[in-house]
Amino acid sequence: MITCVDLFSGVGGVAHGLRMTGKFEPLLVNDVDSDMCESFRLNFPEYDVVCDSIANIDFKKRFGRKKIDLVIGGPPCQAYSTSGKRLMEDPRAVLYHQYYRCLSELQPKMFVYENVKGLLSMAGGKLLEDLTLLFSSLGYSLQVRVLNAADYGVPQERERVIVVGLRDGIAFEYPEPTHKSLLNSKDGDLFSDTSLRAHLTLEDALSDLPLINAGETAQHYLSAPNNNFQKMMRKGAGSVVLDHKAPNHGASLMRVIEKVPPGGLKNDIPLAYRPKSGFPNSYGRLWWDRPSTTITRNFGTPSSARCIHPLRNRALTTREGARLQSFPDSFQFYGSTAKKNLQIGNAVPPLLAFALGKQIVKALR
Image 1 (tube, rainbow, N blue to C red):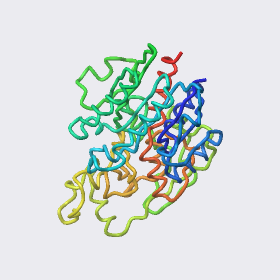
Image 2: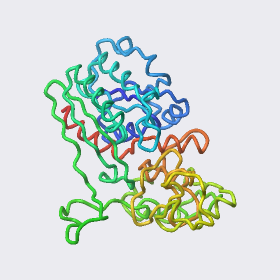
Image 3: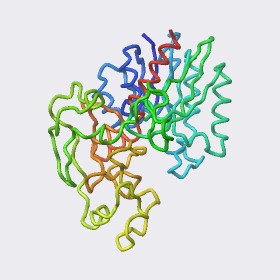
Image 4: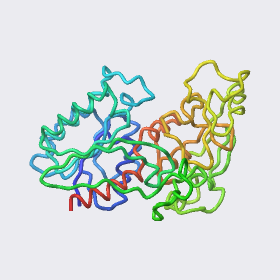
């Protein structure tokens, strides 16, 4: 088994993806958010979860001379996100120094540092330069690539920066895509590589879930699984659908939502109904025949990023958000609806972590 330390673990998107390989033994899991930790424990009762600031963990004292194969994880992404304020003064922007401290104390054979694409341009690229200089000083050779979760079977366009550090002559290859976008492809080039499947759409991901209206709740599936993705999501879940409760929007917001056309955004709403505040990508409706855009922590709030259901006048339910992140229906989330949505929106999609996990296994073998 590959021994690993999972930092900034969140609800367990990385942990679930690695567990799917059957090859990893997490010796320590860490996050500072108590609700995140509680959700993690619900789904991984066998793991040692330390719910505390990473700054308070003495890795040398905890592990002694025990060899660790892998350190994996990424600090909270809000400080780097292109949809945020991107302030270097934000304390979350320098948490990579704590990640560096962990690497210096444990000296793992390999590390994987993941974050949002905005990491590449933060502070004009100086943040990434500082980060790579720090990690290289420990003797690691680095590889950096942006991966799109949709290319690995996740029904969502979600780009993540994956920094891999290697030592002792270990070689690593990023996972090859298994899926391909059909949008903006030239005629005759849709499947130039016939081994690639189309990106999954909202219909692929959600069509077996009840099409409920705002304020409604459903606990039973609409149909049998319609495809392999739905079969995977429902494995071990039983017959009850968890967390499929639609947000209950007020009358004024409902009038706005009803005017958003398919794929539309705030500026596509007729002027008489268009909100005066909000970002250009707010009040956005998703497409039934395309992957989701990036799921954020606010996917239950139409005034946030694009999250209006393509066929119903409401934002996404917690379970729909979890499906679009590739969390199985058996996965449990702890806390209020807002807390659950935060846990889902901040997570690494498990199927992306699974694709990375298989390549890590190959490298460390």
